[in-house]
Image (cartoon, rainbow, N blue to C red; front, side, top):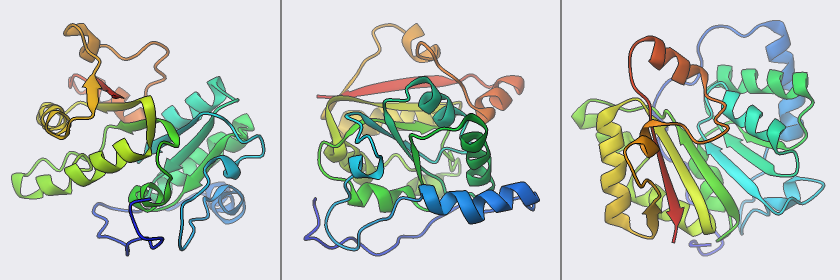
Length: 232
């Protein structure tokens, strides 16, 4: 851990945290299923991510801001031996993934309803096999760019928690945010951009499940970009 056994105070969290009113079934999942799957963050010292699962999986992946949870649920269903952590402050998104977990009886997902940085701060060094950041809020106005999740502090934390050879996958349909991410990752160092040709970042990785937001972007004529960075 980078802190002296003490986690930092909560930071500002931008963006809306609730949309339309939840249906009765969704509210029931929040009340009953979420407490069973919630990541209990320690007040001091590191979190044991493997200990969140009965089978203590060797490989654990983290999705930051999973939206409706389509990608996270698909990954978990495809790889039941892996553990998946997801953080999302938007209550409607949390309700959607809880419904998917119940529908597909997924046992390998644990959730944090709140700021992903609270989980990142608690994770031990070299404990995560991969990080996903898919279609994050672009904060397109220049004065709001500093709110973007890709920033030096978060990149540094990604590098700390990821195992050697682990990959950070970023996807966005906002060209400026793609350029921003490439520049910030290159400036930080410690990661290798895996693309060898233009098609590598214009085409989703093999077995890509997609997301609801991605489908909307394509319907509206925006092109998605996929950047994969491997920890050196």
